[in-house]
Picture 1: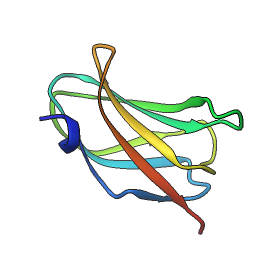
Picture 2: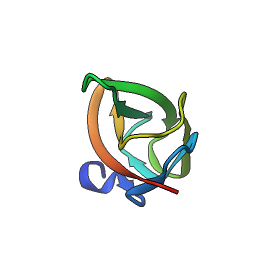
Picture 3: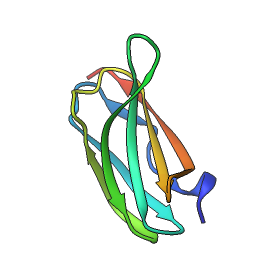
Length: 93
C-alpha cells in the first residue's frame, strides 16, 4: 500500500506558499508526513509535518514554517521508518 503509491498528488507547487497541499496519502499504519527543504549548505531542513492514519488520507495539507522558495521533499514516516518520498518542484508565480 505504500512506496510508489503512497503519494498521489501533483508534483509542483507555487513559490512563497505557506501550505503544501500533499493531496491523498496512503499509509499502511498511522504515521506522519514530513516536509523538508534543502538549506543553503545542502542539509535537509524539516519545515512542517502532519499526522496521517492507516489507509487513504485525503486532502493532506501541511503548514510550513517558512515560505517555500526551493524544491521540497515530502516523507511518509511510520514508526520511525521512511516508507515513501515525493518531490515537489517549486514554480514561480
